[in-house]
Image (tube, rainbow, N blue to C red; front, top):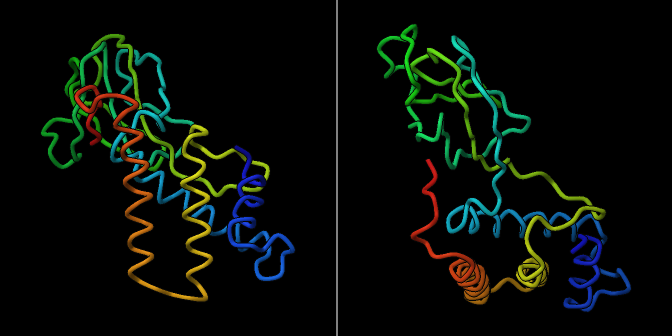
Amino acid sequence: MKVKQVVKLVRMKITDEDTNRWNDYQILDVINEAVRFIRNIFITNQPTMLSQKITGELTEGENIIELEFVPLNYVDVRCNGKRLHLTSLHYIDDTERRAEPNLFVPAGIKAIEVYPIPDKTYKYIVVAIPAAEELSEDDDLPFPEDYSDNVIEYAAMRLSMIDEFDQTVETQLITQIQTNVSTKLAEYAPMAHVVDSY
């Protein structure tokens, strides 16, 4: 669903179709907040639904994998099908050793280094969740259509609460949205098949 449609539906929900109380920028700001809130539920329950997969090859002596985006977190990193484990450079005793990689270390904000340094060519797969980007009205929501209602409910609730703040009602609505999204994600795929994030 386009964000501009979400803005329109939020306006209907808060009875502000005539743009008397909120301008589009203010509503868009709250929609971005709603998207971040729901995105965090996805990251906890089904991280692979938001992830991107990067594949390639590391040649002998090459140990840096560069990503085209800034990752929020790494869901899975593998060389030749074998899982690499996240560590700190401090815990690698010999950074010059060459062998089959079994560890990786973040190297800057858009790259990782694998260790030991590859002793031959290895295929790699990196599954990572890109950092959230602010949405504009022309963008699509970053979720399947079924989750649009939760964004609309959250945004409408936030805007309504600005004038009439009630902590109990807000907590109930946030809990309800969180439960709705978590339930849908649990039905999407059994948790036993979800890869734990690092």
